[in-house]
Image (tube, rainbow, N blue to C red):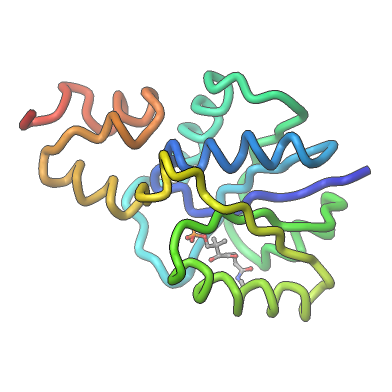
Length: 164
Ligand code: PNS
């Protein structure tokens, strides 16, 4: 059985993430979407809210296949992969700097536990979208609806954007 994990901070989940999840789900028998901690990043949304938004966004996105949403608050990602029987991680690549950032993690994750990383090239329709961009636009009152699922826009901007 082919099992893979799409990990991330999902702070917040974007349309780019959903594209990768939908495409990855078609490649495996079971896909775990794992909300986890990135020691290098200070979070914006509380962890539980990130998990809840990923769950609701995936429910509404009508993604085909066996997709499980899960959370990991401590420990190594590869240990989670081993626990759930996953052979591979799936990551989206938007830009050359993503490749640089992801390459060393992929090598370390394979060194640590033999977990492979499969890269999917982002769809051009969402290749410009990142959680950090969404956080910045939201904090300045801009409209984030083009970049995120409706559940995220409703949670972050319940009264709509301040400008636009
Ligand atoms: O969405 P992000 O923040 O770019 O995802 C990075 C993430 C969460 C996948 C990475 O920080 C991670 O794997 N965190 C879990 C802890 C871990 O295993 N670290 C070692 C990675 S080589």
